Length: 257
Image (cartoon, rainbow, N blue to C red; front, top):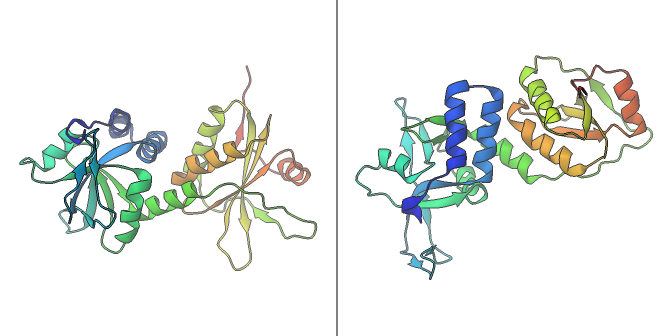
């Protein structure tokens, strides 16, 4: 029930991020946000009915409008709440309707409002964590994409360079992910230059057992620290990857005891 809603996982990451303000705490917060439900204040033009489980059922053509909140500068944000108690801090008179949404249900509303809002704010009268629209869109793009094979044929151009700017946050994310996955032996970070296109990160991942899902998870995990660039991956078992690894200092190496 909405009146009893409480997302403990999201609340735990909000508390940790408020205390630590570290890259790791922020990534855990984002992971909780995209993998759980949250409470959204909204209005709708047609009254819903309730099914036998007490869940609201809306007609297919119902129009929804999410509530906005503004800061002192007049910038608008979509408020998101981790519990009904947090919502009541804003809506003390209980005059506002609300919905429990998943990340996938919520993001279409964010995309439609990109010209109206600066981002979202989670628990504005609690943890008060702001997430920028650009970050949300990038998260959604990388989360929705799947790792697919893109063969490199003989004669194809593969222009790689070391990152030209400081990428400390990305390096930390790569190391943290590597430590949490026993199959990963080492990870090498390069930047790939493609003619007439923005550059993107090129990661060689040396694993005990090559696994596409692990690469997908690595990309999702590192997106908040990607500096707006996309990812391309190559398994370390490939011959061309072995040549790249031989000439590159690894960003991450598994330390065995």
